Each structure stands twice: as structure tokens, then as C-alpha cells.
Length: 88
Image (cartoon, rainbow, N blue to C red):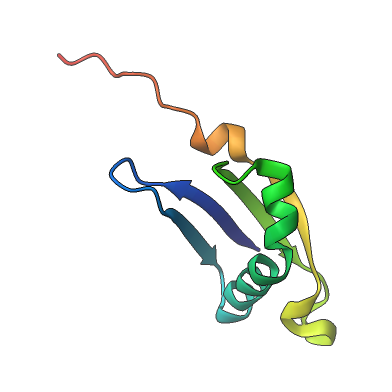
């Protein structure tokens, strides 16, 4: 599994992509998916849209990092603002 996320830092207009996988092969799979499916991601989330996806590499021993599917879209859970914590 690998997490692929797109967000933006408050101080810049450039997007920031985060790829966090369990192995180098999963990281490569997420990077390839981003490179090949970027237009589809833009259509789904918008040019300025943020997303956070959990990707699953299907049969990596057979297909390597080329056969990837979205296991879960966790955008709402991970990118919503956290509630303020009261200070003691």
C-alpha cells in the first residue's frame, strides 16, 4: 500500500505531492500513477483540489509497479481542518 496526497502550503501557490509507501516499489507505483493519471485526478479533484488516496499495488510480483488501484479515498478524513484544542 502507498498513500498519494496533494496539498498546498499556505505560503505558496505550488502544489505539494506526498508519496508514502511501504517499499520502494510502492513509491514507484504511486509516482507512475501520478504521472500517467494526473489529468484524470485534475478532472476529479480540480486544479486546486487537494486529495489523499490509499493505493494498492495489484499482484506486484507479476505486474510490478504498473497495476495500481485506489483502495480508499481518505481526503475528507485527512485534509479537513482539525478542531482547535483548548489551551490549559
